[in-house]
Image 1 (cartoon, rainbow, N blue to C red):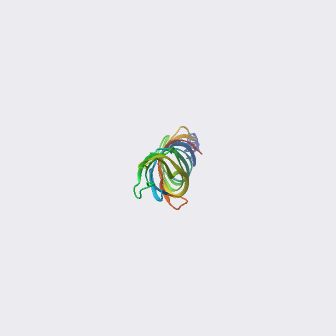
Image 2 (image 1 turned 180 degrees about the vertical axis):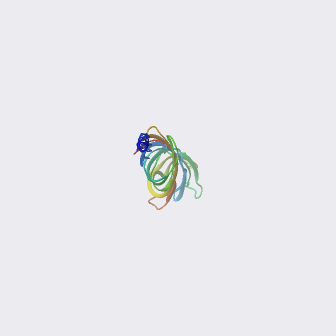
Image 3 (image 1 turned 120 degrees about the vertical axis):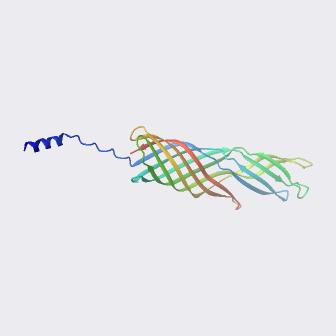
Length: 243
């Protein structure tokens, strides 16, 4: 009896192993960064001096300011699901190369060239994501994502070129461009990676890289269209809160 009592007392005296902390299941991220630009070219035609005037327009590809956020949920082990929202904007000039008909001589166009004022371009994206949380130890984490997107774009487009000319009208000079804002949306895709450093179990910072793409057709009232490759490479930093 004494031996059993001593054995029971020794077992009771052994410290219990602490439970491992529960992994956060929900994480919310908000941040900012930049979106690489994509070039777009267009051909505009209109009637001038009883002939067709033509302008070839090259829209710039400067980087765009980007803000966004996401919500993710761990579903099973390393797998999860999420949704992200992004908004990007940019202003830049477009280059114009045109051929303007002569008022007196048929099929003797005059070349003009110039640059528009600042044209605005903006994009918003809604991205559904399948998440894979890479197993790591310590405060550093890594997560991969991919899925379908819906991207909307709004672009100031050139509709006509205004020019100056004087007798004997052998030359013409670019003056300015008339513009009109067009918008449309289209389905696309996204894929990305995020590296996280958690200061505490619930608060950390994120560095992310994501690629998105959608082919969008902006339709003019006359039925012509301008094709845009919306999206691009997104890079930024964010704050993450986990629950």
